[in-house]
Image (cartoon, rainbow, N blue to C red):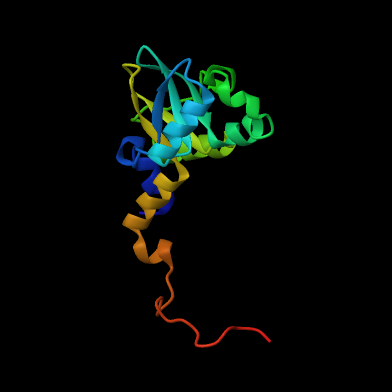
Length: 155
């Protein structure tokens, strides 16, 4: 089976969707950043009543907060992307990946038909899936990865 066929048959629900944190609507940007650091992630899914209402990412921080530090104390609602595009757990990994590529997303929330957040799809989730399935082809490690040169290269 080819990589394309493999990704077409694999569902998003089978990928690692754990790289995210959740914050309630109205949270200050400063608190959202703290939550992101604590969870070692680059994305917060913003919720209201258990439903996804927005997404706040490191890209938002770089484009909307870094140059304007006073935005650290505003509500994340003013900076996040409201009503983000989502996929369901039954979406094929290939379709989700193509959507991410087409829309230039780094994070794609996965929401069940019941409206509950199931996770966050990233490119790393796809890479990890492929690396587990095709370790030799994907990792392409050198024959002696622990071998280091004895002297510095160059003149």
